[in-house]
Every structure is written in structure tokens, then in C-alpha cells.
Image 1 (cartoon, rainbow, N blue to C red):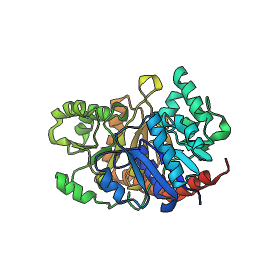
Image 2 (cartoon, rainbow, N blue to C red):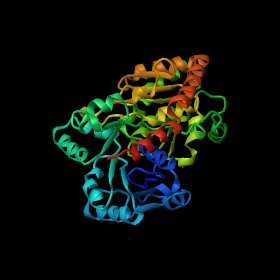
Image 3 (cartoon, helix red, strand yellow):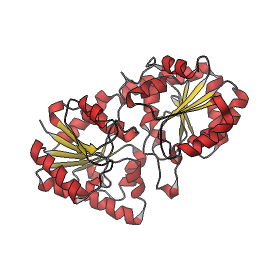
Image 4 (tube, rainbow, N blue to C red):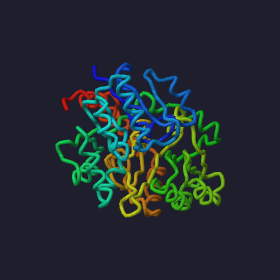
Length: 372
């Protein structure tokens, strides 16, 4: 059996879509076949103790492709006799690939997300991405949007689709939402939940600008914004006029995420592309997690986000730059619980059929075991 070293900046207990993706890939492998090298994060010691495979933590919260990081990763390749190295995000740590081969790795696999797709459109970054990809045996992409972008700089025969999965046994209807509603005093009220890092691309500010229109039609509605990040201060200022109809929880424990999703009636994250295409949504794992929880979703049209929604069936895709369009989608779902429920049921079935981790781990195993 191939032993794999996963080198990644993105790993729990730090919350985020890429973190969930990489953790799911590791969790789907036999424990004796995987080693993870990731940065230290608050709570990492307790988290690592629960994992059935070794997790080696870098002493800081960020790893860059420096000599020190390369030396430590190379030592892990030799110590654990790893034949394959997976970079949890191709850029920038994929620059260490030659060092991994010199240490004994026979196969290099690099995962890509939204930021690598953005790099492919920027002249200087494009050259760096091409250099990274030249040392990979396989470079994964999330969906058609990211494939088209990456194919500008990476040979098409190296591109392999590997999208994230969802643990449908964790993200499910009845995952603890009633307890969250009781704790927050939201029983009996329509709840729109947005669970994400608080950064401009995710569109929480647009939800807040749309909220007066929603309250004008559904006056008892509550917007529940879950997560932490650098945009929190701005969002708190925007939320202040709404009083108790908007709740910002701040960060919540990774294990509590299914319950907070389950507390909603509708999930909304109207993501938008920013900075001339440099800041773009690669897919949006949380849309799939919300679907698995049985919620209809309202998604922005940024990048690959529409790949995570069956528009009109499991949710609605909107222009995340237009508050009035976001408000209209939310009102349609909140005013028609029967339609919203049907979308949620279709989303749950779709998640089980197409996105469950059991499907993804099989693809990942074949990718690791392929000949270089």
C-alpha cells in the first residue's frame, strides 16, 4: 500500500472549505498509509490526538516554501518511507516538489482550488503556476470553471478532476439544529444561515444590505452569520441597525458546524468575484454541506460556485453583487416553505448520490496509486 505525506497549510482545527476537503481525503485513507504535515493552530494538539494517523505540526501558523519547511518535509518522506506526496494546495507549497522527489517520493499530486485558478489569469503568477505544475504527476481541479483556467498553463493530460466530498452522516437533517435554535432563542422563527469565513468574497455584507427587503416581507426572519475572519468588524457595523434579527456568532468549534447549518431554514452565501478575478470562489464546499443537511441554498455566481448547486432544483444561483436579487431569492424561499423543503430534499439526495465521501475517497485512492 502506498504511504502518502500530505503537506498542507489548510487543515483542521482551522475552519474552512479547503481544510474540510483535505481532512476528508486523509480520513478516507487507511490510517497506516497517511502522514500529515500542517501548521500549528489553536486546538491542534487535542484535534491531532483524535486522528488515527500521525499529524506533524510546523511550529508556526503558516508554512511557506522555504528551505526549513522543505527540509522538514523531506525528513518526513524519508522517516515514514512515503512514496507519494500530496500538496493540499498547489500554490505556493508545490514549489517544494523537487525536494520531495530528491527525498524519495515517486509521485507528486497537487490539489488546486480557487486561488490557483485565479493565478492562471495573471501574467507573473501564471509563470509561477506553470513552474509548480511542471513538477507534478497530477494536478487536480474542482470543476469545469477551474479546469478551463488551469489548462492555460498546465498540460491537460496532467489535469484530473477531484472535487470535495461531504460526510452525509454528519451533515444531515436533525444534526442538532433545534438545540442551537433553543440556545440562541430562535424557536419558531424563519432562519437564513450563512456559515463561512468572514471575508468580502463570501458576500455576508450583501446579505446584510439585502436584509431590509427580506424583513419587509418576512418580518420575523433572522439572519444567522456563523464564522470568524477579518471582515467581522465591518459586518458588525452593518448589522447594528437590525438588532436581534441579525446574529453574528463568531467562530464555532469545527465539530459544531453541522448543528449550526441544521439550525437554518435556508442557507445563503452570495459569493462574488473580486480584485479583477484574483479573488474567486473555487467551488464552495459549504453549499454541498448545506444541501446534505436538507437546506435549499442561495449561491453567488462566482467562479465554480454554480457547480455546487443545481439551479432551480437544489437552490438558486444569484448575482452576488446585487442585494435586490439576493433578497428576491431569499423571499421566494422563505415565503414558500413547501418549495424550499422540496429543494432541500433534492439537495440531500444529490449529496448522497454524487458528493458523499465514499465516492471521493475511491477516486483519490486511484489517483495516488497510479503510475508516475
